[in-house]
Image (cartoon, rainbow, N blue to C red; front, side):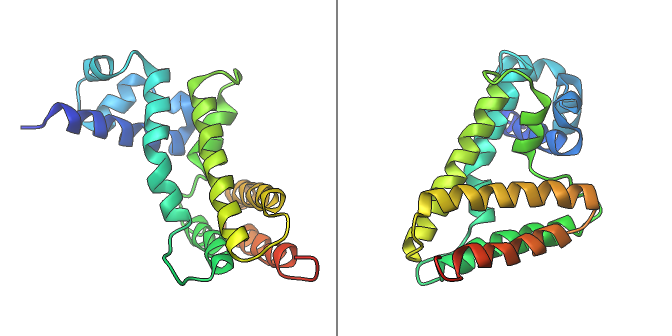
Length: 187
C-alpha cells in the first residue's frame, strides 16, 4: 500500500520531470497525476493547486540537484569541481532527451516575478551562486562573489545554447572560457 508521503513525493518528481520535458504548460494537474500514477484529486489533497505544487517540487529538487551539479568531497580541487559541473552537463546535453535546466524552463514560462515557480528558480540560482562562491574562495580566486555570478551566467547560457544546438559542445566551449576567467593572470 502506498503511503501519503510517497504519493506527495511521486507528484513532486513527476512535476519536475514534466517541467523539464515541456515547461509549466506540460505540468498540468492531470498530467502530473498520470505520471505519478496517482489520482488527480491527490494533487489537491497535497497542494492548493498547480502553482504550489510546482514551487514545492522545485524546492524539493533543489538540494539534490545542486549536489549532482557540484559533488565532491574534502581534498578535491575546488576549481575542478566547478569545471566538472560543465563537463557533467555537457555529457547530459549530448543525450537525445536533454532539455536544460528545469529552473530556467519554469522561470521563462511564468511572467510574474512573484509566481511561486519564479521564486523557486531564484532561490535555486542563489544557492548555486553561493556554492560556487564558496568553491572559488577555497581556491583563492579574487573577487569570488562577482566571478561566481559570471560563472553561473556562463553555465546557464551554455545550457541554453546546448539545448538549442542539441549537443554538449557549448558547455565544453564555456568550460574553456571558465578556465580563462578563473585561472589566467588576474584570476
